[in-house]
Image (tube, rainbow, N blue to C red; front, side):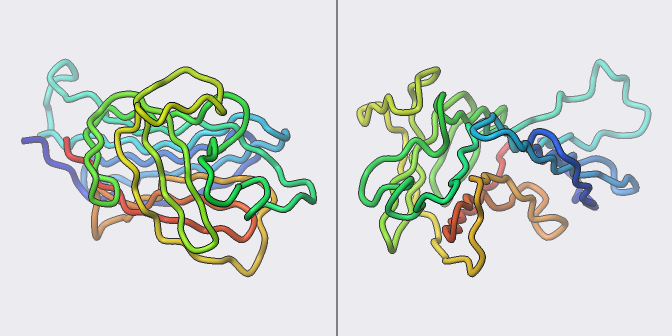
Length: 206
C-alpha cells in the first residue's frame, strides 16, 4: 500500500498558462503549488495535481513509485461583455465546459469525485447547468471537438454545489484545489465563470 504525506503548500502567480501542481513528498519538505494564467482569449489552460509517494530514505530511484498526476486541459473562453449564466453557459443544455477542442481529464490514479468512481484513464468533461444546479459530466469518448457530445458514452453525471459570486469573472477558470494537510489525497474541483462558482470534492485512491 503506497502511503502519502500531507504537503505544505505555497502559491506563486505569474502570467502564462493556468497550472496548479501539488506534490506530496517527505514530511520535512516544502511543496510549492504554482498558478499561472494565460491571457490570450480562448487559449488553452490546464490545472494539475501530482501526488508523489513517500518512500524510505535511501530507496534507489528505480524502486520509487512514479508520481500520480491528475490533469484537466480546457479551452479558456472570455465573456467580453456577453451574458454567461443562461447565455454562454446555456440553461438545461449540455455545455462543452470550455472552448474549441473538448475539455479533457487525464488521471493516472482512480478518483472519487462527488461520491462517483472515475477509474484512471482519459475522459472528456462536459457540464449541464440550470439557474439552481450544475452537473459535471464525465464522458468516455475522447479527442473530439467540444460540441460533439454523445450521451451514450457518459460514465457519470456528478452534481456540484452551486454558489453565486458577488464579483464576475471574465474568463472561465477550472481548478483542482488541494485540501492540504487535513486531507492530503483530496481537494476541490472548482468551475468559475461570471458569477458561477460550482464545486465538488475529489479524492485519489492509489
